[in-house]
Image 1: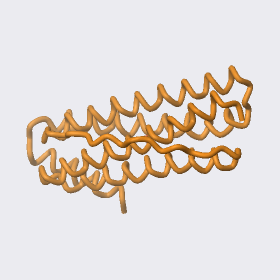
Image 2: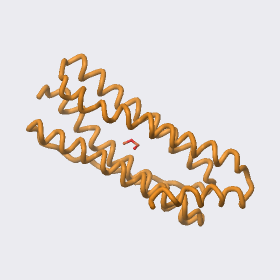
Image 3: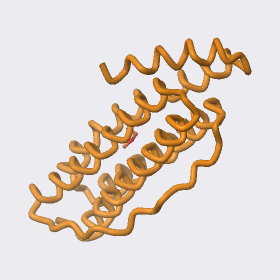
Image 4: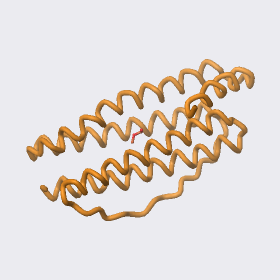
Length: 162
Ligand code: OFO
């Protein structure tokens, strides 16, 4: 495999694990703030990012490349406003989309069509991920400062993991 691509995919493994850890920190912050549904939604998101990381790990393995792990950063999430967390999720998903697009560009430039094909799944996934995150922002924006409305949204989000 082209080593430029192998290195970039390996960096994405670490990035996906870091994304998982970020969502776990958000989940714990929302659990502390008593938004149980949003905490469960974020834990589900944590699991999805772990799944993404392993997709890259398994792909590299299938291309006979080994994976080098890197450091996972602990994220301080000290806000308790669910709208702020929702906005942070949306912003982070946009960063992830940018990373996937950069990988895609590299794979096309290097004519690694197997990797292009592999990345197609992530291109589609990011459309859904951004749409879900945008819904979160909308719902907590509509809820405003009303605790009752926030808890209504929270209850809906709690259904995601079921
Ligand atoms: Fe790995 O991008 Fe969100 O789900």
